[in-house]
Image 1 (cartoon, rainbow, N blue to C red):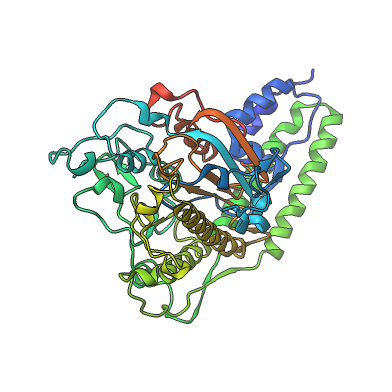
Image 2 (image 1 turned 30 degrees about the horizontal axis):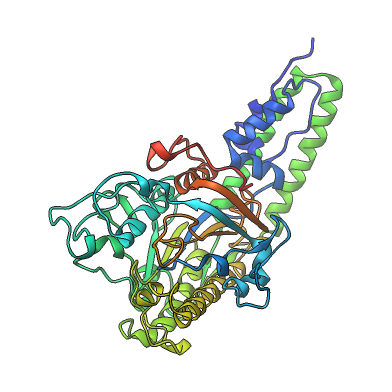
Length: 478
């Protein structure tokens, strides 16, 4: 008698999550069951589609402040055929144009809102609300200092853990650093603290970013290698893990042999042969991957406003190097703060970013300056993606293996809107996302976006952030 076997039995195991099992007569799984299995474990589904994974999955956050101008940010066109052009005037400057060469690596999200900001609670300042909700999707909490000027909570907090730290709880225990937080002029403002912080391990436990590239370099790379030397980072652990996966898969298949028909045994034997070939290939062809730790860069003072572009580039270089050396799989870069006062003098702009953002609907000069600032941040995002794309991980890039999220604390700049927050996701997270698209939603909650990202990292959570505004994990990303 033939044994009936559910294919999902193997999809739940470490072996066949990575090695696709051939369809056998003995399998009773229906198409709907297979689809349900993919929903339950999107990482397994993606890895099954792609075959054996080639690098660790990562989450990287890139923050820029003070909102955007909607018509200069939203692409034109359809989901798969979109352009970084202004729909009403294709000749006008579009702030995402610097990302044109990387378009197929992006998912541009439109219609994702900070719906958690509609909840009643302490705090009325738009920048407090934006920064506090941006990564936690929870109402603010008031500290003993209460409210101050313009409704700022002087010593308040986000209401819970931020998305980066929640993901670090899932994937941060296998690297030297659980997570890495870098900043550029992200200095704590003692009278409006919420505007200065975006990462939280829990309420009132913010994770401060390191603003000095030299200090970050010394902390991250201490003991790895002398400056200027090559430090080989052998992927022994990854190879051992892969061998363990292959060994377990072979044992599972061999134990299955007596339980199936002669026809199925032929299929299984052929599959075993292919696994043995793969095992031989891995042993022979995987070269060691090196992370080159250069000498520390020039001693640039992070204080002066004119050094802002230099410090930002140095921090992005450190991020890419930390990724190449697999020091952490959760990394963030915070450009300035909510209510940023950066002066973009290198763009010929003398006013500060925050003041400009308040005048974009009344002043054409301010509007153009805001467009130029947004465009400059797009150039920086493109630079970071290029650095990650240059990190080879045995055939795939670190960008392909990552989910890089560009986020802002506001939507439309002047009214400090919680709607249409300008989210961009880059990379595919090892196959869990399907980039190259412009995806439009109607009133989607950002906590549901974060829930979908959490699930792509294997989380079993059913809600992230404020439950009352959640409709379940956001669809349309894969």
